[in-house]
Image 1: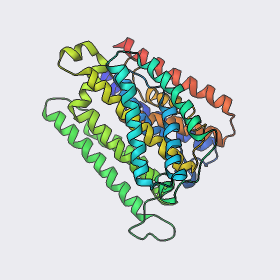
Image 2 (image 1 turned 90 degrees about the vertical axis):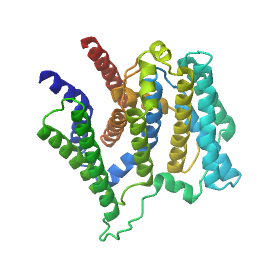
Image 3 (image 1 turned 30 degrees about the vertical axis):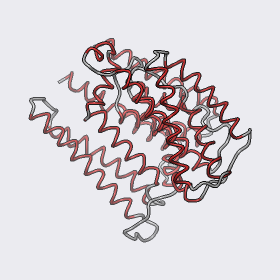
Length: 384
């Protein structure tokens, strides 16, 4: 029972930590954190970090690192500005071209890493410098904007209220939240039943129900707060689709299992028939596309492409993945963990800003939290 309890604590420890941090800052900010407007801003401010963290999770699980994501995001934002604002291109083909450019950047870096065996740290460090310089060259040191109104809706828009809520309450958002909560419970229950059918022992049923009741309750409360303002932001729908997709890929597909095998022991994976070079190559392509999408969402929210866009993004993205439980040596990590890790960073940033804590001490605290997460990972490995 002690081992099982310890396993449950590891599995839900991040969620508990997030709830504790949110409650703490709710108290320290005199109730400002959970105000609908601030909660909406919290989602918008962290959307591009969460999206890039999904790609970074795959890279880190595969045993690599990507230091260039912030510079790539800034470069793609600058490219979008040149295409849409200066050249007048329609936002749809311009967006597609930017995503393709992100994939090509990922492919270029992935080729050097996968096939020529140059360490990812060196390749992506070079990429960080190269694309930071190209961003400055593309913008000629100037800020470019504003972007087309339709493109801005990617980051600043909200889903329509098809059910016609009254009094400023967004009924459609609440209905979507209930359906998502029900789908998550159904999926977890089906997984539990399948595991039991194959002889795996799960915890007591009442514990399972209590855990998911608490998770669903917190989720629906946050959706209720969003619905009481303007509803669910468009970018949250994009995030939800990507989170569901990458959760499915990592947990239910052969490719996902091979990525974990690659990070756990590359030589053993190769001897088992896994094409490790190709897998690494496509992992970096995925990272490039998601970095491009993160850059597009950022400039859509800012409504301007600036030479400083993307500076420091890679630190927040990597920190989110490590805080979310990924191992620095590869082979370990979950999508939900990366998302929760990103929200932990986001809540800390938001809460400390509301409290008036200076950016200097914010960086100190974030660095200590990241160090503590890695120490916890090393400690857990030493206990196995």
